[in-house]
Image (cartoon, rainbow, N blue to C red):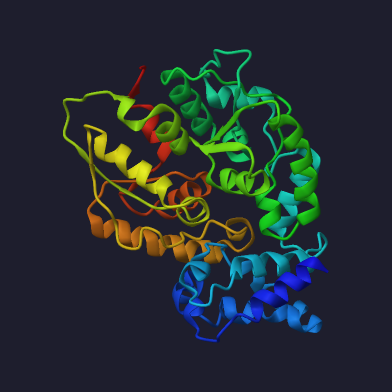
Length: 365
């Protein structure tokens, strides 16, 4: 009942101006014939029989929150979309990508199926050691860095070690629930949150390099000190205190994609921190690209459930990268990295996850 009241209150604020639709990246690049836009989709819950009609298209929304940013009536359309997805959520009717993700979370406490330990060790190679056995700081790797993009976890550990941070990685952490919450699995997310809360309460600070994890965890646990690694570096260590390796080679031209989870969900300060780091790096020439904050298509469950939409938006982003003349694209988000890396294969652009890129250039304090 509470969600229905919230839904009605938000939808009734709409002044039918169409600003959300005119700024929706899925509408702009995939077309309104594919996705009619936030306004149409958000009104579907008014009439219950319409829910089946939007079951497919509601998952074409990337959750980028651009509609929320531009709405003159302050309609919380992302919240409306979450409510609708929770109403239509049915594990038996999910698309294959979402079914796999839900099954993995229920089975393994991870959004992706873990590799066996032997394969994992072979892929990681020499792992960066965690120097502390007891600490007040918890590093939360997130499912993708733990089970697929191992180099992000290793890079984060290296940065924490080089900044003289005492931290631990408990063995009993589970998925933060962000992926399943994005597709409407509210009850599953709540169960995951209960387990993680019991773990988190033993620590003063939680650090993660996953944009999706940090935005979700901050929403779930507003009273806890939870940082993206970029926030931790600025607010606890101080970017001015970082020591960068000096190189004799020419500067590499770098541009950056702004992940929606950081730029809009957390706040633009996180991107400010990232840009300050890039501008301080002696071997980097940082150039901003056009529409750096426009969604790349990886969020909201779209990368797994509607890859055709993710591809369209990512290819648009790659075109903007080309226009900057940059040889290297960085982004501080595992999912954005995966999508942009996949769609840049036919180009000369090198795509790096931001923390992975940064780790090689930070010296011990």
